[in-house]
Length: 388
Length: 248
Image (cartoon, rainbow over all chains, first blue to last red; front, top):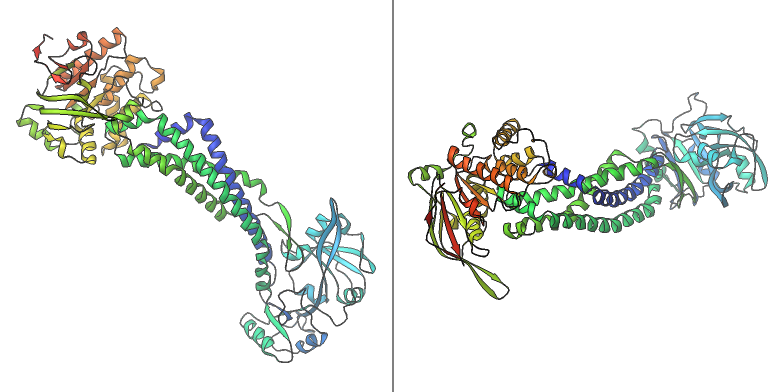
């Protein structure tokens, strides 16, 4: 039978200053790790929620992003008659949108360089191809220099609100609407009429991508295969969801940095836990001797001190989970090296991340507590009693 | 204590039922090595202590009386000689067996009480019972009975720092007897107490010996304390002097 847990809990409570400081050190380490995980989780959520499951994105063969892809209008015209593409709900046109993507800079308060966002010129069917809602105003009209901005763009750039005018390229544009893309990557994009964007940026016959809707889920792999195999196109088709999911890698450097910082901090925190537990073993030497005289084995003593260290670390882990909570849901943006613009997302501290954070804390507790616990267990009864 | 008798029956009881000797030593010797020096703490001590005896071990500092008590409690091994306690040859028991043996058969009372400061009187007395298979409610019931027996029924939830030295030592005695051991070993149990508290503790040990038949071995400097014992053994420079019977 083990030494009662009350013994450990009360000891932690008696030396509460040391306990709180050690737990705080572990808590901060866990908080750093959780913050890094929350960033990547949020970015992943934003990117993975982008795209319709039946949408197929077509880029030029060899291009890894829309920005670096160039497609002629002819490809679009040929694709209009490709089998497997869904018709519009009215049945009057196929669900296929030719699009131009470019990066523009919008003025942003507190930033000299402004905010880089993706300007997407698209056909009206491009709006139908995406699950978008109008939050404010109306959609752009064909033939007009009008912009509809994502919610995040509207929030972060006061000049991009409904009724405002923006100088983009060679012309002035009117902001006529704000679209809600449900925390997806589209939230940081600006939509406009395809022809107006092409004219403004001299991009006649230099389009970037084509977005198509497969007729059904089973027909989607066939559609992708037929587009990739068609010798008339130098195009590469892929699921729109896969395309965005691959961009999660843009958060990898920050995640790696966060993990590195957390690992470095964890060494310090483990030593803090070790120091605290060594002090506890020295201070409670005669108690250890007494417990041995009462019949508790060396194993019980080792387990008890190890548990105490784990309790200490567990408290730190909980503290870390609490410390990181204010970050949960905070909206931010990160430079996306694929789109060369910013992708907005909300920090997301998931339950799984918190479980991971707790496990990390317990690992620090085990690393810090093992040697002191071993020292306690190896004490000879008489030398322990004489330490009183 | 008879209501809590024998939680963990042991063959030792059967052995001791047929053999009256609780402690037997033959040429027991203990040498301590400190740096390069060998210090002879106990030299060729042979003695027998019988069931139900109250024995006082007396002698000046460094005479080896505490060493003898530690050897009886198997807290350290002898350098030479034999020691049998309650029918067990302690030299052949492993570390885990010794821990279990000590828990079942020996109650130890320290000079400085050695209570766990973060546990209440009840928690301290319950502690040895955590090593038994008793349920929580049974453990608490036994601990309460032991505390009432030492006259601390009204101090069960007090912590050591909230009690006097005498009360702390009585809690320590309750902890020593809660598992109903055959043997109570007390190392200067009155050494840290005022005269009145010392008297209470000695009366309690004598009562445990007289009314409950516990074998008590007590190390003391104090002739007054030793007078409570039925027999006093004197040690000097590690050697046992001829015993003299004492009136109780």
